[in-house]
Length: 211
Image 1 (tube, rainbow, N blue to C red):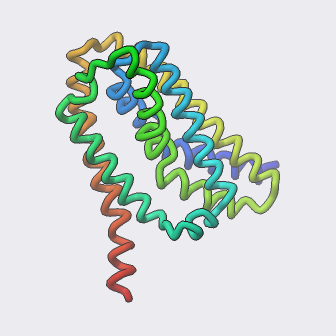
Image 2: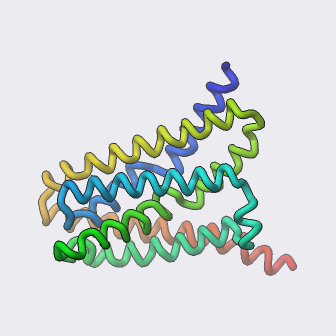
């Protein structure tokens, strides 16, 4: 029992740190600021479900998918870094909230941002996916595997509720506050992007130069 509890705490804390729901929220806020509360809730729900399914699939399939497609986690980091950087640039120039959507475009926009970048790579990022693969390989028993899946579900559920609360924050801050926050977050996202990019590029270059 103590072993399961220890493993559960490890799984929960590592997923919470890597998914970082509080870090996901400002990006979600800026990208969904032009949506109604109902559409924002729909986006948060879809992003959370898709993110959970993707991490779970990688946890259950282990290294098989990566090996089958010849993908490395480092390559995933490089691509994630590029996506983050482009997103950060848009945020820095306050492009995301200035987009006024027509009613006919809202559904498509919700579908677009809920999958990329919210589900991938914000929730199901390289860190969370790698963590899921490693912890599942270490699980050894069905009980520990069940605890791992429950810990992942708990973190994604917390992420969903944090994203839902962003509606009230957006309303309180107003348009000017959102624009200021978006520019600040743009800088932070671009820094994260550079870290992602080079943390993935370094092992790839070392591998090439090593040969």
